[in-house]
Amino acid sequence: MEFKSDTKEKLHVITLPGPALSATMTEELSAFLMAYLQNDAPPADKQVRNLVLVFKDINTIDIAAAEAFVNVQQKFYEDNASFVICELQKPVEKFLDENELLELMNVTPTLSEAIDIVQMEEIEREMMRDGGTD
Image (cartoon, rainbow, N blue to C red):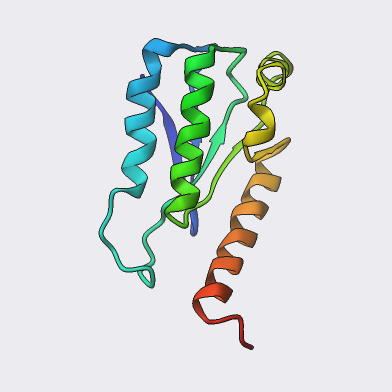
């Protein structure tokens, strides 16, 4: 599976190939995404570990793949990194909502909004590291 990746200052934007995400792709995709967390750099390092996934080309997703995204997102947040999904197509959004997974995901309508969320979460983490003082 080929992924289009674009690295920005504080995040990687990964566009998933369409038109479908199935259970057979789940293991490879999870390993690919988790590789962004596999560094031993100290928190002050400029290592880019935040991800934005672009779903614009995905028209269908199965339950195993959807659950894998929920699990990967949880691991990112546990490791103080952001994980945002954007540009969901209506059928995928409906499927996730019907399976009560949409509410567990950090989803935005546009790439611009996803980038804004990552930047806000980075600011929050920096404030927490600095003790929240001015």
